[in-house]
Image (tube, rainbow, N blue to C red):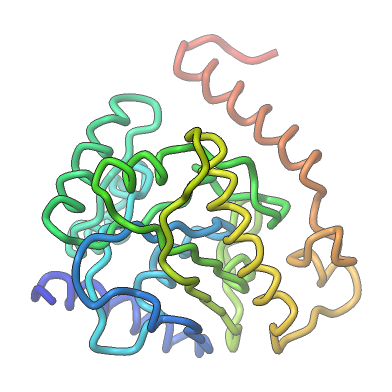
Length: 255
């Protein structure tokens, strides 16, 4: 592990300790000790990439995670991401530059991490995924490691106050590496997401902390009895946010 990655990762770990986070890693033996692989995880909180990359016990391999360019523009977070060699994704510009960097990392035998859903799921239920993870893995001849994180939404997530509580359990579960076998990219992506959803269900079933009554159960999906917004409500609000951002970039006031 490079010195810069060690520095960045230990700063994140210091933050985890300050919040007394109980970070649990399950199935980390499924991460190959050498060679390229794509770690594909669900996305429920802003810190998911750090938990997925740093949950395995030492010695661990470096993970080159694809993260939105906006995070690199923030002084503290951006500095840490650059220290850890993460890959910025300009979703409103040249997104292919990130794919090129990720492909080069895989060709060099590295681990690349990404969230196939593209953005946080405010319902905490996996959204329809993009095909980028499968295409990267196909091009590199690399296996996909399906991964599920749970509990991270309680710390820092979309449309919630940035007041992370202490003593939160975060579980990261890594599945067995696999090569999708379906014929089309769309079908291979569904195959990947089905595995991620199975791992997520295992995390939810074994999660040791329970919510209080509403509204304290905001972090539990509606289909599990919580008061999180439904997937349909979440998609509607995401569509509104996308439209607002599009209008802002055009310089046209929204009505």
